[in-house]
Length: 102
Length: 138
Image 1 (cartoon, rainbow over the protein chains, first blue to last red):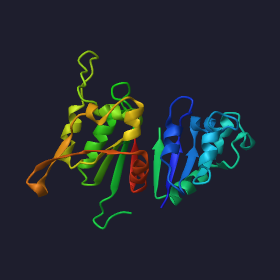
Image 2: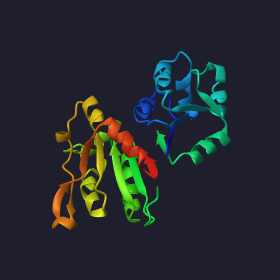
Image 3: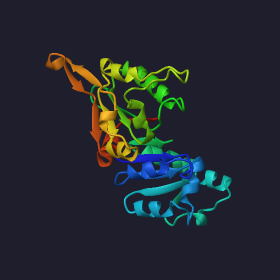
Image 4: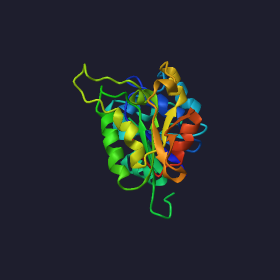
């Protein structure tokens, strides 16, 4: 069973996203929430690292946190899925465990 | 998956250096509380979390309690699996020799002292995370 990894801090502030991506297993999901959403912006310094992981794991963004920061789905690295709070619950319920990268 | 005994696998992930924030101390407190419930406990030290295990910590100059001795007592609370990430040490110019020797007494082998610290590489850490029932991050 897979792991849902959550990231709630900007990758420009601390290495949580980098550490997370270094520890995801095949079939895991990664959900960026709160300030974590800024790392998924198209053209950002972390876009390539995210793209490199996409074959092995699914990437998601929490929509309300994205909108709050003035960004839209089309601003994101291609293939990153936008979920609402219900989608967050579905991801957590569908995973065997949740690992928070603070 | 939960084992038949109702025991679950708990992993405490430690990614912060001690003293600058409350994370390391809070983690220890939660670990000790959790140990009372006889769960299968593992600790992971990665990123700056490896600094929590540094030998020779001396907090006398900063007015804070030196809680590093507590790690050496964890074996008495059945907390005997401390996984330290090799890459995190190397990135910080550290080697396992820089860490406190932490051991436990194996009651099944005439109380022989055995090391609690296990050096693992990043891929092993990924596997350890994937084997848990519950993960608590600090």
